[in-house]
Image 1 (cartoon, rainbow, N blue to C red):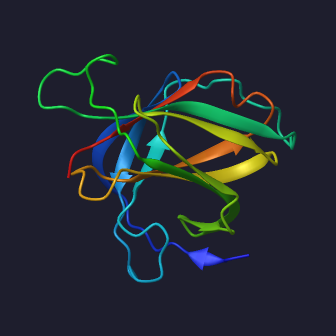
Image 2: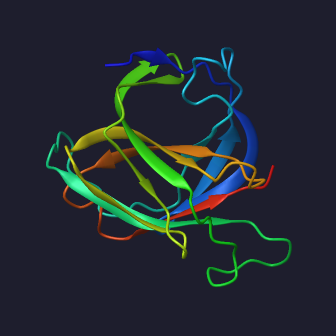
Amino acid sequence: MQNIRLGLKALPIAAAMVGAMTLAACQGDSTNPTTDVLAGVAHVTSNDTTIGTPPVGTTTPGSFHGFVIGHGTGVDTITTAPRMVGATITAYPHLGFDGDTPRIGDPVGTVTADAAGAFQFPEIPGGPYVVIVRPPAASGYHSVYILATISNVSNSGNWWVVLSQE
């Protein structure tokens, strides 16, 4: 298990969507970018809706799926926003916090978004996770991480992850 201290400061920057949730993001600012898994990754901090919230203490296995898109140069819609082909989505067990900073374990899996920006994460043990979404290198978009509880109901709707431009 990697018990990594993330060392992030929250600075407001952008918005993202997960499922039917609109999420506010914060820019990550690492104090140790060479060893910090989340160095420079924005944190999704709030939402306006919950999809399939599992009961407290639920540890049933689950999966999740959705799309990774970016902000374009004009007015974006779900159909016109740029698709993040090749974005990677990695899930790490969430081990708690050091102050406001999440601690993570070893990754349980990584998937890559297809030509439509779509991804399907396989079934993993239920529980709290830090999910990191990274765009392809040199794409001009920021990475984000999401605190999520995975269970048998977490695959009930699409995650819409919207990455902001650098």
